Length: 304
Image 1 (spheres, one colour):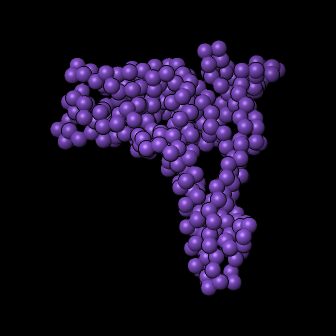
Image 2 (cartoon, rainbow, N blue to C red; image 1 turned 135 degrees about the vertical axis):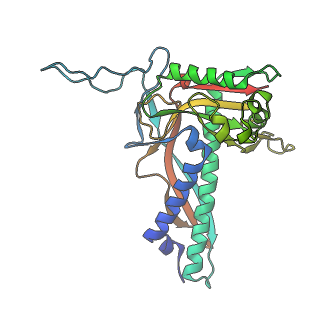
Image 3 (cartoon, rainbow, N blue to C red; image 1 turned 135 degrees about the horizontal axis):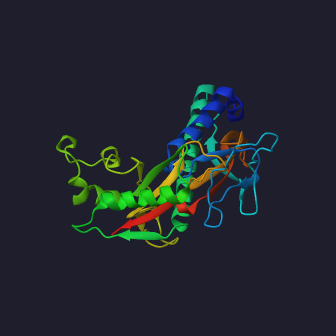
């Protein structure tokens, strides 16, 4: 009888499992808000930017015979700690299972683990982002110019963050916030007749300074305690995160959030046998640490 461990040992299947997990995470809101930084060790230093330790571009000119400017770390820097994470998915094994059937069962388990890990990461990143910021309210009346208000927020974080290089501005919308914005008079009035007055993220970004890439999270969370009636609500609801990000972040760039990940250990798949011997378990292991790096590089806005 074929064994799951034999199937999982195949390089093709290992690549499938790892690819499923990585592709799922790359597409998620979590990666949009806190892109990954591959680091060589479980713990290490990263730059934190505050009022006392602002981002500055170094003068790299070197006098003849003089020493070069050194990039290093100091007492104001933070320490990341890529703590282990893991998910298991049992797979029932039957004697009649063919190798092909077992392979498909393992692929399904890998897909399930990838989906859950991505959702868990999204929830962790959004929660940490919201908890780190103080919300500013925008009351939506007939005279509100929502475009101008968001332009002000974008310019503020550009100046405060040390914007430049490969950094870009992004917006993460709660589902209720996007509904309010796309139907507001100040937005609809700015769209041309050729755009059919139908706001989308593509048309909306063209109205704003920097043309920020926008995403909307429709993730729902049950906020009721265990045993109580469910209380479902959107994670961001009426809130909008305007922030600075980097598609290829490093330990030093001044973007808002990052996910530090141990290089070469990201989403490693494997198997082990259950205690009763009736099933084998598909497992996924990884290590990461989500950190807010530059609080000045983001604004949290609540649409009232």
